[in-house]
Image (cartoon, rainbow, N blue to C red; front, top):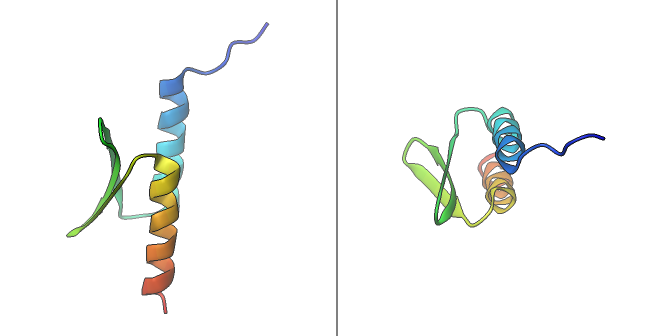
Amino acid sequence: MTTAPSADLVMERLQQEAVREFPGWTFERDRSGWTAVHGDIRFTRPTLAALRAILRIHRATRCH
């Protein structure tokens, strides 16, 4: 029988994945959700998935 990874371990892996996808950004979690910070830019969303989605949009609009 195998055991499922703990929720903390899963969230840590997802955070590491976000750091790789968005170099230069830092990711923090608190009671209000997740926050990504890069210099003076700060985004907060209730979930890491929602935060990553907004960062993808932000990245796409800054590249054009």
